[in-house]
Every structure is written in C-alpha cells, then in structure tokens.
Image 1 (cartoon, rainbow, N blue to C red):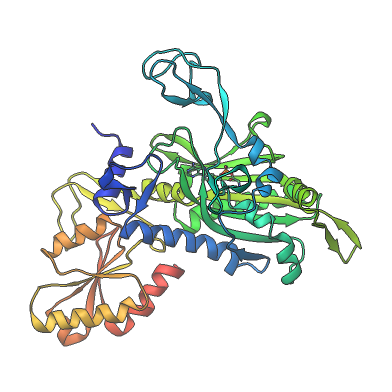
Image 2 (cartoon, rainbow, N blue to C red):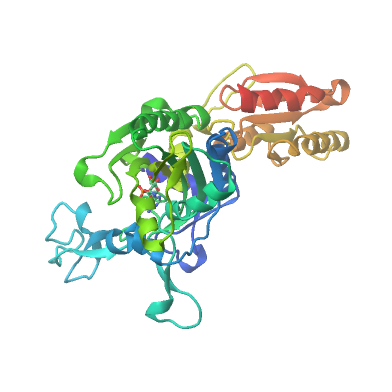
Length: 444
Ligand code: GAP
C-alpha cells in the first residue's frame, strides 16, 4: 500500500505539477522541474509572499541581487569556513552519508561496511569566472539569498528614504550541494528562497522577533489556507544554532514523513553587517537623527523555501473521498481525488466548459465567456469528455470554479457556476461573473 507521500509524488507528476529534472536522461539527484500547473502554483505562492512582504508594507522594499557574487562575501559571512555538513563514506560501497543523520555512525546503513571518520563537507557549489580555471577565478553559486541583501544594505539606505526599522525582501534561487537530497522536493540542490532581512535598533530585536513569528504563522494560515493544526513552531536549542544566529525558531509542517521545517526565523544580531563592514572596509553604520547615535542595526530574518511551502500546500490540500460524493445535481460513485487548494493560490481559477461539443452557438458563447474571463483569471477552456469527467479533472488539480455554458445561456445570458469543494451550483449572469469571482477569490 502506497503511503500518502508516494501518492502525492505520483499525483504531481501525473497531473503536470512536478517532473524529475533531465527526465529523459534518467534524472539528476536533487533537481526538479515544475510543469504547467506547478509553475502557476509556485508563482502564486511567491506573489502572495511578495505582496505580504513588500506591497502591503510601507517599511519593506524589494531586491533582486545576482546569484554569483564576489567570493569575498562568502569569506566575510562565514560560509567558506562554516557552511558544511559532516560526511562519512562507506569503505566498502563508497556511498556517502550525512553523519548527523545516521543512528550508528560507524556502520554503513546500506551494506553494513565500515564508515570513515566524519569530515566537514562544504555545501557551496563552486564555479570559475572567465576562461582560466585557477584559484583566483573561483566563485560560488549563492547558498542563501540573504547575503545579496546585506551587501546591498548601504545602496538601499543611500538611495531609498528608509528609516529603522525597515526590511529588504528578496525571492530567488539558492544552491546547496546537499550530501543526501531527498524526500522529493523537500531537500534539493537547487531551490528558491523567500527571505526578508528586517533591520532594527539594537535592544528592540526580541519584541520584533515575536511579532514577525506571529505574522509569518498568520501568512501560512490566512493567505495560503494551510490548516493551523498542521503547523507548529519549534525553538532551536543553543547547540543547533547556525554560526550567525543568536536565536532561531522553525515553522514546521506536519508532512506525511513527519514534522519538518518550512521556514526558519533567525535573530542574526549584527553579525553580517559587522563582518561586511570589516571585510569590505565600507562604513555600514546607521545614523539615527533623533538620537544622533550611530550603530550597526540588528537583523531579524524570516527565510522560507518555495518548494517546501509548495509541498506543504499540496499535502494539506490533497484529499481522497472514498465512494465519491452525492448532491442533488451530481452523484459520483468512485473514489474522488480533490485538491482543496486555497482559491488564491490555485493554478487554474476557472474552467470554462461548453455543455456539449461542436454545437456552434454553444461553442461560440463558451469561447466568448472564456475570452472575457481570461484577462482577469487564469482560465482553462475544456470541451473534451462528458461534463462529469471534466468536473472531476478540475477537482483533482484544484480548480475552484467550473463554469458551464448550456442551451439556456443562449436565452438568459447566465451560466452555471459549480464549486469544487461543495459541488454546489449557482446560476450567475455573465455580466456579473468577473465581479463576483474576484470578490470570492480575493476578498472572502
Ligand atoms: N538565510 C538563512 C537560511 O538560508 P536555512 O534554514 O538554511 O536558513 C531557510 O534555509 C529555508 O530555506 C528553509 O527553512 C527551507 O525552507 C529552505 N531550504 C534550505 N535548504 C533547502 C534545501 N536543500 N532544499 C529545499 N529548501 C531548502
């Protein structure tokens, strides 16, 4: 019997959400591609985060920094020296493992062979800039987007009228040469981060930290629609803290494989700006006019991985209804698969379905409705198969509304709107569709 994680993995491939990278060549460990539905869901999650973090805030600005940066940045941030995991290798089968993930650190979990002593393995991907591959041309793919923000702190302060407390937000790719990627898209070698560095006056960091943790939890529940009972906060023990952190909590999701981190919120003190000031020789202090004080701000950092949030949304929404559902208008006698995604992040918002195919007037009217709606919502026109099958197809990929154009539509300029979660049907005038759907999707 498949467990539900395996079901979700196979569902995401079958319905075009996620594909193995380089699939026709046998794939590549730790890399995945996002198909037509996956890319929409991912984009909706990122847009939701971006809106919550920048557009709805007066105190946070956005940034898009480069992936490859001056390698001195990684020396200053401590990544060259400290960004590593302990690695052990089996002397018999030569497989490599993360030592801290092993119960018995002396024996290979695959073949029982003897393991080497753990050595530190740096997770940064290396590359070379320019035509010569020597030590002077080494550069790294960024392992976090955060450093791009710290090294632009001075640019932002000098060009924007920001005053403490203020934040800089960024969404972008990050790369880590994980020893053991796995759990589908949970631990990847190439992924996207949504990070915000919130700069505060020293002494105020604990209050702001609490507030940010609360805001972040609310985002998952209210904006993404993740069930509250599937989220929890875990405080880090002192030994667990990253080299830069003075305090940290994880927001964890109750995945089928167990509670696991989807976001880390760290109190980074003034570690990063102090290091960059020291190593770049640039003045990164902040001048507070009111008190005539000069200091290096402290930082609170919420940092989440897009793919992990994506996976949490899918796990939360995936629903099987054995024996199907029955209402006054529909009766399904087989197991139904439903993706109860929050309407705001559903990849397709509206399916436009002519009741019958190739009936000229109905097809033309359905196309007209589709053209009207597609300027406002991501819609799909679907005329293949019986109407019930088409409803099921859209339930499975999380489309909240299916709109049917029938013979009556030609008389009364109204359509039947069918709701994914309740199978309720409502007759709505075409002229009112956009305003009603907009309200229901984005305001209710
Ligand atoms: N700037 C802080 C930072 O990078 P982190 O806890 O290492 O902190 C933050 O990463 C988030 O990035 C994690 O909560 C997770 O969602 C995501 N993340 C980290 N490593 C990942 C990986 N190998 N694959 C997918 N997502 C990852």
